[in-house]
Length: 494
Image (cartoon, rainbow, N blue to C red):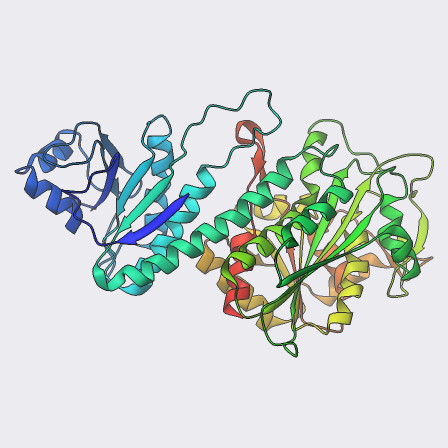
């Protein structure tokens, strides 16, 4: 998809659809005012007839717009103006989300959008939002269908009209939004694939594919023999019941100086989670193919970094395994030794994500990281606590936590800071090992984070529990691509 920023006349612009905006109480934006003037006031008359007030999320599509060169005119409501003259970022996002919905059955492939930003910051932010929404809306999960899904919304060219002084800021925003969307769509594609295709080996090959012809990205894949030599007994206990071998996938993006400490992203890559011997209920188990969305988000973030080429160093670690029940599977009550040397009593084999992550987090020490962030569909308890809107954030470093929270707000991919108090650690006591892998029903997402914190004492660390945000269920079932926007924003801010 092509994104362009340039100065245009909404009246004379030839396009299959021109998109302008209107504020609350029918206050037309400058571009909409130009269209209204050219039509001799017909636009205002039409809006009044349709009771269009410019409220946030309101939209009206005109198929035969008066007095302009475009074939269609879409008017978006932006709600109330803020003090700076713009609509709020949330209202702009809400308005732009109507574009794919209203144009999904339109033959239009070339769109021209006028948001009339008043300064560089709002121009860049709005452009980023537009590109993210348009590109992610064009994603299709139909590669395994015998016939492709109906094409729906799939523009080939989007031009964002802006003031001459804002072309550079608008262009930067479009490029950033498109790059983030590319990472999100890769994350979604991997998440939506079934587990008979997307195995740990497949994830390793995707990482190698991503690094092809990319001098700033290198990939190393550790097999089970190498992990065994490193003492990763915890990670290997999860794959013990599966015919699919586990992989530890290491990606290194080197955009900064060689002596610059890297930021490390650690992704949980359970390509299917039956629960192991602690078998999950059958209903909805198909969605456990999404238990590798943390790993997918690491690959998606790396894809975005390759597009943007920032001058930073980032390491991605993916702990990939399949959790299956069999005669060789780990059993409740078994005790394993992690790479750190801590012994773990496995009371529940369905609490496997923390078992693969803890060894990857210990492995992360060798990079002498500036920060480590793990991303995992870790606990159903986090879904109960926060629903599907916010990612759970836990950290042993307040400064790191605040940076991630700020990045989430900026990227509209928000997280919520959860407690990580010492009082919760007692729930992980074991009579027979250094630590148990579960701490009972109470505060399940917190005790899971407490478990991980035992392996992160040598660096600044944060844990993102994305169990509620990584995918949607029901009629809209599918991976969301989160938290790629949050992670990218955090890394760019670093």
